[in-house]
Image 1: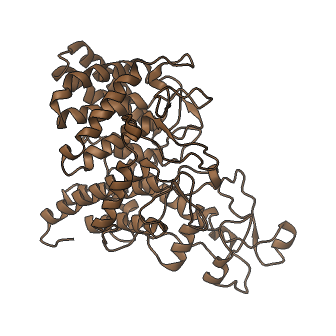
Image 2: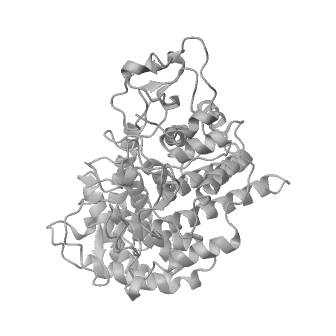
Image 3: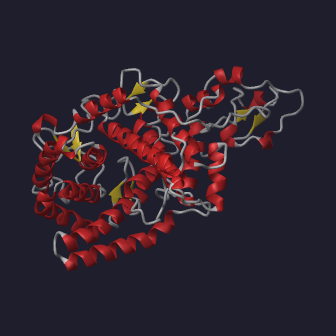
Length: 488
């Protein structure tokens, strides 16, 4: 059983002469003594089996050594230069309107290893990516043609029949360039796409009012389905497990329906739909508390609780209404809990902690083993985005409650402040950037031990989330400048 690398032995203090104090070392702090049960005690080490053991924690471990905690204590430092961000946008836009189809390719990679072919248009990825495009564009006119093409594709996609006998609105991915639903076996249905697409289309109407009627014709089909099927069985965000109650699905659906109710009233002149959407959104909102533990941690789903999908949901689904607010106990507890989990899960994080380098890279969920189970670029960027949103809220005068403030202080290594939160977000992105060895090209994952980029090349969702993170940083920095004469 191993937790990280042999290099830990040279970085941590040696064993003392006295008997080990085994009870003082938590499971996530264990340093491997590299002995089986028969040799463990003879080596002066502690033996305590861990079952279940998704993170491969050692059973034989030192009683006087501990894995250092990852630090998010850092001074603000802009993670990417303007030139680097220009490269990110270039790689991002190259994946949009792929081959003139209007579709967004998940990644221009036909052979990603265990994931197979990513050269498809996922409904979820497309909706999130196109929303990121308009939220981070400096001038909508520069991206307008991409939206014209995408809207035409969305209209075409809704008119197709599904070869699997399910609603076309729950088909996860489509072939490029034909646009036909993927005919092979896959985790389906997937229920998050229609709501996410509606959110993007309603934002599009703000930027281009002339497409209001076309957008409404698509949105009402999507949201009618969501309103009637929000609690139906679905695959999760990672297309691996099934449930009727994923936090990611519910929280983003709530936003789509709340926005949709206003849009139905104003753009559709449809009070009946507006009323229905509002009522279902209220029902969903009332059930969200079932995902919150006594400590505030938000569980994605009972069978897969510790999942960074919750953080992505906080960023995508927030309505500026205080429900799962950035500085609320739930968001803080979830960020803190996942930070601790991934700190001890990945060798790259342990190495950074032992070297005194701030930052922690985030993966998908506890016990993930896909392609070895690694940090993901898009999720590390999502965690940074939440920290930047917290910095902005703090600068705007939001005061976290006592529990949230205490957790933030422990996470940041200092009393919570806008500057400390901004620096923490920077630390995550800077640690991630360390492993970008091919310019600003970003693979899906970073190897947990070596830091080598792996899995899907040029993943579109990566670029979308990095763009959103840097946009959130800019907003936070502006808020801090208004709140203080000191410019960060």
